[in-house]
Length: 225
Image 1 (tube, rainbow, N blue to C red):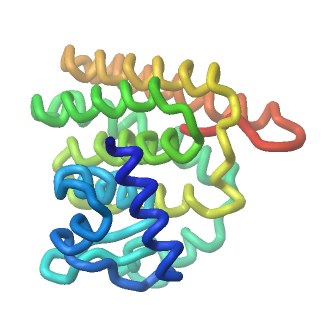
Image 2 (cartoon, rainbow, N blue to C red):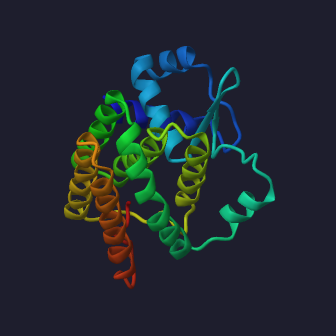
Protein backbone atom coordinates (compact mmCIF):
# COMPACT_ATOMS: atom_id res chain seq x y z
CA UNK A 1 0.00 0.00 0.00
CA UNK A 2 2.88 2.39 0.75
CA UNK A 3 4.27 1.84 -2.76
CA UNK A 4 0.81 2.69 -4.15
CA UNK A 5 0.76 5.87 -2.06
CA UNK A 6 4.28 6.76 -3.25
CA UNK A 7 3.32 6.31 -6.89
CA UNK A 8 0.17 8.39 -6.36
CA UNK A 9 2.18 11.20 -4.77
CA UNK A 10 4.84 11.17 -7.48
CA UNK A 11 2.08 11.26 -10.09
CA UNK A 12 0.47 14.23 -8.33
CA UNK A 13 3.78 16.11 -8.29
CA UNK A 14 4.35 15.42 -11.99
CA UNK A 15 0.81 16.28 -13.08
CA UNK A 16 0.90 19.59 -11.19
CA UNK A 17 4.41 20.33 -12.51
CA UNK A 18 5.69 21.00 -9.01
CA UNK A 19 9.38 21.73 -8.53
CA UNK A 20 11.85 22.08 -5.67
CA UNK A 21 10.74 24.78 -3.27
CA UNK A 22 7.03 24.34 -4.01
CA UNK A 23 4.70 23.48 -1.13
CA UNK A 24 2.49 20.41 -1.02
CA UNK A 25 -1.12 20.74 0.19
CA UNK A 26 -1.89 20.02 3.87
CA UNK A 27 -1.77 16.31 4.72
CA UNK A 28 -5.53 15.86 5.12
CA UNK A 29 -6.33 17.49 1.78
CA UNK A 30 -3.47 15.73 -0.02
CA UNK A 31 -4.47 12.31 1.32
CA UNK A 32 -8.03 12.86 0.08
CA UNK A 33 -6.83 13.92 -3.36
CA UNK A 34 -4.54 10.91 -3.64
CA UNK A 35 -7.12 8.47 -2.28
CA UNK A 36 -4.81 7.13 0.45
CA UNK A 37 -4.90 7.15 4.23
CA UNK A 38 -3.06 9.82 6.21
CA UNK A 39 -0.96 7.05 7.80
CA UNK A 40 0.20 5.87 4.38
CA UNK A 41 0.88 9.43 3.28
CA UNK A 42 2.90 10.21 6.42
CA UNK A 43 5.01 7.09 5.89
CA UNK A 44 5.74 8.07 2.28
CA UNK A 45 6.58 11.66 3.25
CA UNK A 46 8.92 10.38 6.00
CA UNK A 47 10.77 8.25 3.44
CA UNK A 48 10.99 11.11 0.97
CA UNK A 49 12.24 13.43 3.71
CA UNK A 50 14.93 10.91 4.68
CA UNK A 51 16.14 10.85 1.07
CA UNK A 52 16.24 14.65 0.87
CA UNK A 53 13.41 14.93 -1.63
CA UNK A 54 11.01 16.82 0.65
CA UNK A 55 11.37 18.68 3.91
CA UNK A 56 8.82 19.49 6.61
CA UNK A 57 8.80 22.34 9.07
CA UNK A 58 6.62 22.51 12.17
CA UNK A 59 3.77 24.88 11.38
CA UNK A 60 5.18 25.54 7.91
CA UNK A 61 4.05 22.55 5.86
CA UNK A 62 5.83 20.20 3.45
CA UNK A 63 8.05 21.43 0.62
CA UNK A 64 9.74 19.70 -2.29
CA UNK A 65 13.54 19.47 -2.34
CA UNK A 66 16.17 19.24 0.37
CA UNK A 67 15.82 21.20 3.58
CA UNK A 68 17.41 24.66 3.21
CA UNK A 69 20.78 24.77 4.92
CA UNK A 70 21.01 27.15 7.87
CA UNK A 71 24.59 26.48 8.84
CA UNK A 72 26.31 29.15 6.78
CA UNK A 73 28.58 28.92 3.74
CA UNK A 74 30.67 26.00 5.02
CA UNK A 75 27.96 23.36 4.66
CA UNK A 76 26.67 24.94 1.46
CA UNK A 77 30.15 24.43 0.05
CA UNK A 78 30.23 20.90 1.43
CA UNK A 79 27.09 20.00 -0.49
CA UNK A 80 28.22 21.66 -3.72
CA UNK A 81 31.89 20.76 -3.83
CA UNK A 82 32.14 17.08 -2.97
CA UNK A 83 32.67 14.10 -5.26
CA UNK A 84 31.02 10.67 -4.86
CA UNK A 85 34.37 9.35 -3.58
CA UNK A 86 34.51 12.14 -0.97
CA UNK A 87 31.01 11.28 0.23
CA UNK A 88 31.79 7.56 0.44
CA UNK A 89 34.95 8.27 2.45
CA UNK A 90 33.09 10.62 4.80
CA UNK A 91 30.33 8.07 5.39
CA UNK A 92 32.86 5.36 6.16
CA UNK A 93 34.33 7.53 8.90
CA UNK A 94 31.07 8.95 10.24
CA UNK A 95 28.33 6.34 10.12
CA UNK A 96 30.01 3.50 12.07
CA UNK A 97 30.34 5.95 14.98
CA UNK A 98 26.65 6.79 14.64
CA UNK A 99 25.72 3.11 14.77
CA UNK A 100 27.86 2.56 17.85
CA UNK A 101 26.25 5.46 19.70
CA UNK A 102 22.73 4.60 18.52
CA UNK A 103 23.14 1.04 19.83
CA UNK A 104 23.28 2.44 23.36
CA UNK A 105 20.57 5.11 22.99
CA UNK A 106 17.96 3.73 20.58
CA UNK A 107 14.46 3.16 21.94
CA UNK A 108 12.59 -0.05 21.26
CA UNK A 109 10.39 1.85 18.79
CA UNK A 110 13.55 3.01 16.98
CA UNK A 111 14.73 -0.59 16.68
CA UNK A 112 11.37 -1.79 15.39
CA UNK A 113 11.33 0.94 12.74
CA UNK A 114 14.90 0.10 11.69
CA UNK A 115 13.93 -3.56 11.39
CA UNK A 116 10.95 -2.54 9.26
CA UNK A 117 13.29 -0.61 6.96
CA UNK A 118 15.57 -3.65 6.63
CA UNK A 119 12.55 -5.81 5.70
CA UNK A 120 11.34 -3.26 3.18
CA UNK A 121 14.80 -3.12 1.63
CA UNK A 122 14.88 -6.90 1.33
CA UNK A 123 11.47 -6.85 -0.39
CA UNK A 124 12.19 -3.86 -2.67
CA UNK A 125 11.65 -4.74 -6.33
CA UNK A 126 12.56 -1.38 -7.83
CA UNK A 127 15.35 1.16 -7.49
CA UNK A 128 12.87 3.81 -6.31
CA UNK A 129 11.60 1.60 -3.47
CA UNK A 130 15.12 0.60 -2.48
CA UNK A 131 16.40 4.18 -2.33
CA UNK A 132 13.48 5.38 -0.19
CA UNK A 133 13.95 2.74 2.49
CA UNK A 134 17.75 2.86 2.32
CA UNK A 135 17.89 6.60 2.97
CA UNK A 136 15.34 6.26 5.76
CA UNK A 137 17.34 3.45 7.39
CA UNK A 138 20.52 5.52 7.62
CA UNK A 139 18.72 8.64 8.80
CA UNK A 140 16.86 6.68 11.49
CA UNK A 141 20.18 5.50 12.93
CA UNK A 142 21.27 9.11 13.33
CA UNK A 143 17.92 10.02 14.90
CA UNK A 144 18.33 7.19 17.39
CA UNK A 145 21.42 8.96 18.78
CA UNK A 146 19.15 11.76 20.09
CA UNK A 147 21.91 14.20 19.12
CA UNK A 148 20.59 17.12 17.03
CA UNK A 149 24.03 17.98 15.61
CA UNK A 150 24.64 14.43 14.37
CA UNK A 151 21.12 14.23 12.93
CA UNK A 152 21.65 17.52 11.04
CA UNK A 153 24.91 16.23 9.57
CA UNK A 154 23.25 13.00 8.44
CA UNK A 155 20.48 15.03 6.79
CA UNK A 156 23.15 16.90 4.84
CA UNK A 157 24.82 13.63 3.83
CA UNK A 158 21.51 12.19 2.64
CA UNK A 159 20.88 15.39 0.71
CA UNK A 160 24.23 15.04 -1.05
CA UNK A 161 23.51 11.39 -1.87
CA UNK A 162 20.53 12.34 -4.08
CA UNK A 163 22.66 14.44 -6.43
CA UNK A 164 22.52 12.90 -9.95
CA UNK A 165 26.26 12.24 -10.04
CA UNK A 166 26.08 10.39 -6.70
CA UNK A 167 22.77 8.55 -6.89
CA UNK A 168 23.41 5.38 -8.90
CA UNK A 169 20.78 2.81 -9.69
CA UNK A 170 20.91 -0.56 -7.97
CA UNK A 171 20.16 -2.76 -10.93
CA UNK A 172 20.86 -6.12 -9.31
CA UNK A 173 18.19 -7.64 -7.09
CA UNK A 174 20.86 -9.94 -5.67
CA UNK A 175 22.91 -6.92 -4.63
CA UNK A 176 19.89 -5.26 -3.04
CA UNK A 177 19.19 -8.41 -1.04
CA UNK A 178 22.82 -8.65 0.07
CA UNK A 179 22.88 -5.08 1.33
CA UNK A 180 19.52 -5.60 3.05
CA UNK A 181 21.07 -8.53 4.95
CA UNK A 182 23.86 -6.22 6.06
CA UNK A 183 21.25 -3.70 7.24
CA UNK A 184 19.63 -6.45 9.31
CA UNK A 185 23.00 -7.37 10.85
CA UNK A 186 23.40 -3.76 11.99
CA UNK A 187 19.92 -3.84 13.54
CA UNK A 188 20.65 -7.15 15.29
CA UNK A 189 23.78 -5.68 16.88
CA UNK A 190 21.85 -2.60 17.98
CA UNK A 191 19.09 -4.76 19.50
CA UNK A 192 21.80 -6.58 21.48
CA UNK A 193 23.09 -3.15 22.61
CA UNK A 194 26.47 -4.13 21.17
CA UNK A 195 27.87 -0.85 19.92
CA UNK A 196 31.22 -2.28 18.84
CA UNK A 197 29.58 -4.90 16.63
CA UNK A 198 27.09 -2.36 15.26
CA UNK A 199 30.00 -0.13 14.23
CA UNK A 200 31.84 -3.06 12.66
CA UNK A 201 28.74 -4.16 10.72
CA UNK A 202 28.16 -0.62 9.46
CA UNK A 203 31.81 -0.34 8.41
CA UNK A 204 31.60 -3.65 6.55
CA UNK A 205 28.37 -2.54 4.87
CA UNK A 206 29.73 0.79 3.66
CA UNK A 207 32.99 -0.86 2.56
CA UNK A 208 30.95 -3.32 0.49
CA UNK A 209 28.97 -0.47 -1.05
CA UNK A 210 32.15 1.44 -1.85
CA UNK A 211 33.88 -1.64 -3.26
CA UNK A 212 31.01 -2.63 -5.54
CA UNK A 213 30.54 0.91 -6.77
CA UNK A 214 34.23 1.35 -7.60
CA UNK A 215 34.36 -2.02 -9.38
CA UNK A 216 31.91 -0.77 -12.03
CA UNK A 217 33.70 0.76 -14.97
CA UNK A 218 30.60 1.68 -16.99
CA UNK A 219 26.81 1.77 -16.82
CA UNK A 220 24.75 1.86 -13.64
CA UNK A 221 26.55 0.96 -10.44
CA UNK A 222 25.33 -1.36 -7.74
CA UNK A 223 25.69 1.31 -5.08
CA UNK A 224 22.69 1.88 -2.82
CA UNK A 225 24.13 2.19 0.67
